[in-house]
Length: 208
Image (cartoon, rainbow, N blue to C red; front, side):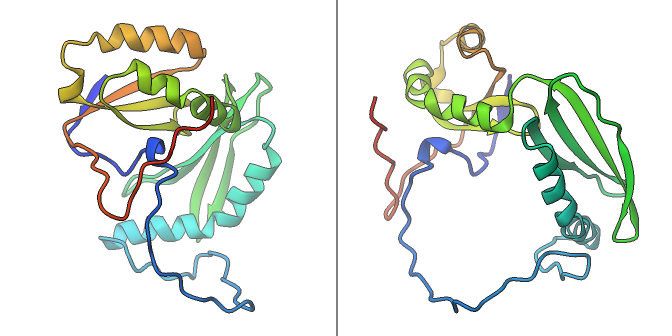
């Protein structure tokens, strides 16, 4: 269990939130270009981060191909990138049938594709398990204000507002819920309160 001082923009609890933003008409003939190595990166903080993002653009076609090829086994797919190091693309797969790692080239730089087999749930199965139990999780965990299914780890993640969970044995509760769901559960604590402001409304609970 770890403490987070700052809240990430989460919360599938607010997944149905509605924000009023004026819509702009788009041409029906508009065709957005597919990402590639030549696509400019305008929002990176440093040249090195721009390089990593451009690398992801260059690997977009490969990512789509891998998602399609391993769709029936795919538990997760994510980039593992660190500044100054070669990039990796990691695929988590259900089942024990091995898949050989690959070494490719993208945007003139090496890319290793790593396959990690033996995962318990596909990403769709974990997401369904997560969504189907949202109301129950709300009732079990005081201070629960954000949840998501983590494609990188295969865990259902609960973000708890710490002041509302004082005196609760969250580790015992986590183990109980993990046993019921038959899926890994991670609890992250935060001192940042999610506030629903003007123009945003929390979704109604789905029918039981």
